[in-house]
Amino acid sequence: MKQNFTVRQGALDGVEAFLSVAQHRSFRRAAAELGVTPSAISQAVRTLEARIGAALFIRTTRSVGLTEAGERFLSRAKPAFEELIAASAVAHELGRRPTGRLRLSVPRAVVPVLLEPLIASFSQAYPEIEVEIAASEKLVDLAVEGFDAGIRMGQFIDADMIAVRLTPPFRFIIVGSPIYFSNRDLPASLDDLRHHACLRIRRSNGALAPWSLDDKGRAIEIAVAGPLITHDFPTMLGAAIEGMGVAHVPEPIAVEQIRAGKLIEVLASFAPTAPGVFLYYPSHRQMTPKLRAFIDHMKNRPDAAGKTRIRGNGDKPVK
Image (cartoon, rainbow, N blue to C red; front, side, top):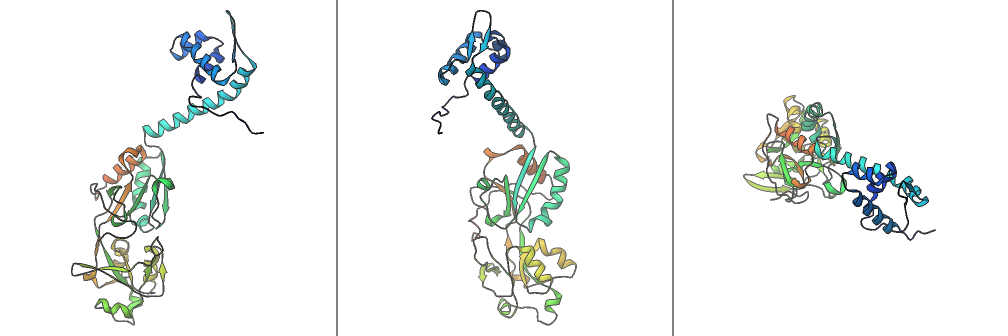
C-alpha cells in the first residue's frame, strides 16, 4: 500500500525536545537538560504534534505520559535520532583531525617510484589515516569517483585544479635493452626509428599516443610502429627490458635499469622535458585534514618543491 505521508521541511524540529520530555516525563527537567525555558519546550512539542497531526503526550498537573502515538513515535524516533547524533560526531571528527580513508587516483608508474617510500613514512606519521591507492591510467573525475586527490603529470591536469609539485621536471627518453640491440644498430636519427620495433601506449581516450619529441627546441610528434601496445609505462618498460623493442618512457622509471645496464638510452638529444608529476585536487574549500596532512608530509620531503598551478587539457599535452 502506497503511503501518502511525506517528510516536510523542518521535520526534525522539536524531536530533541520530545525525546527529552519522554525520557524525563517532565517538561521542566527536559528544559533544564537542553538549557532552554519550559515554555520553549512546550512550544516545540506543540509544534511537533501539530505537524504530525497527533497528540504525543498526556499532560496533567502532576504527570506527563505518552499517548499510543507518542509511544510509537518514540520507538522509531529515538534510535534514528541517536544515529544522527553518531553520524554528526563521526563527520565532526573527520573535519577536525587527520583520520579516515584517503583515496588517491594515480598512474601505475608513480607507485614504485614515488608513492611506496612516501606512503610508508606517511602511514607511520598518521596511523589513523587509511590510504587507498587506485592505480590506473584513466583520467577520472575526482568528485564523481569519490577520490580525495589525484596524481598525474602536469600536462594532463585541468586548469581549474590546484596542483602541488611532487617531482622536478624530467625528460622522456628512448631506451632499449642490450639484448634488443645485440643484432641491430643503435638509431642515429629519428628516421632510423622506422627500422626499429617501437613500443606504443594507448591513451585513456582510446587513441594511440604518438611519440612526442624535441627537435632542436621544436616539439614534434612522430607515428611509430611495433609489436606491442600497452596501457601504461611500467608494462612498456618491462617489454623493453625483455628485448621486445625500444620504448619512450619517463626517465625516472628507467634510470635504475639504465644504471644496472639493463637498458641503453638512445637519441638523447631528442628527449623532451615534461613538467613533472603533481598531486591535484579541486579547490581549497574542499580541503580535509587528512588531505592537508598528506600534502604537508610531501612538502616536508627534502626534495619537495612548492605549489604551482598547471594548465592542462584532458589527456592531451598542452603545446
